Image 1 (cartoon, rainbow, N blue to C red):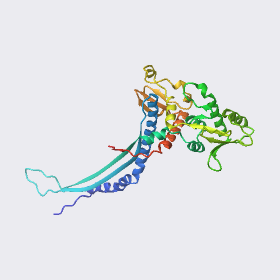
Image 2 (image 1 turned 180 degrees about the horizontal axis):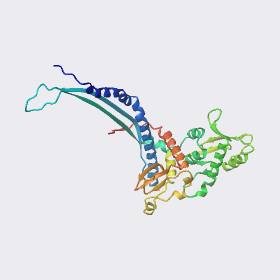
Image 3 (image 1 turned 135 degrees about the vertical axis):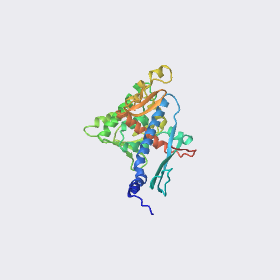
Length: 358
């Protein structure tokens, strides 16, 4: 006699089949929503941590080292299966008990996400040439034209303007007073749109144009006096910007820029060190002597801080940039962009470390 499978046995299958389209959508295009932001955040956070860690290393006279994330690939695998098993009772004896006929559903879902990350060490001749080479005036121009604070850009990137030096030895603040005055005047003129930096009409020279008004002419005169340049019928408040200190003309503003390596050493002096490490001779106390302390600051704590923008452990302490320290965060962002611009020139041809993540 044929057996009839009860309708209730079909219910799990109907539920399972109705869920399949939703599961597949979450593993298809929806997987980008689920993973891209996480990978993006992880790479951004670890890149910031790596940069801060290298600043702390330089403070301790340790060697800096960079690993670049070359690529991130992820393999998604999704499989499902449905099965039905049945048992039938064709008889019984007085010594055994057999259950009634039954249907046993079997459901299966398997899902795997296997990311593979490739790292490239930034090293070798090309890399060190790029970080040691002075930042080009063109790049500084691009930063200023894109809206960066000219005072912040010059503080980090410029070593000398005409005969004025920007903290050449980080030990004597008096040497830097005139340079600081120049930066503040440049920022004032930038905010009032009284200064323009760009290319000359023949596209051969960088130029700086001052636009005097009744409100700012005193600032312009003071700035030109500090720079040692004079406005006349020939210059007409238009000065050439050059990096050539051997051939200086009367209407020329000569700028010596820093390399990324020098910028990082400069900012590393603003890392606050534990008193224990200073007394043990592990690190020099340079923070109070550095003129960059108004521009950038890395704090230290014995325990992990909760109000940090970036935090890295080193030598038994936590070094961090406070989340509400907007000046330090802006300077750090500028440093990261400058590093990407300079190190981006490097064509890496060495081995790549590829790690599957489990």
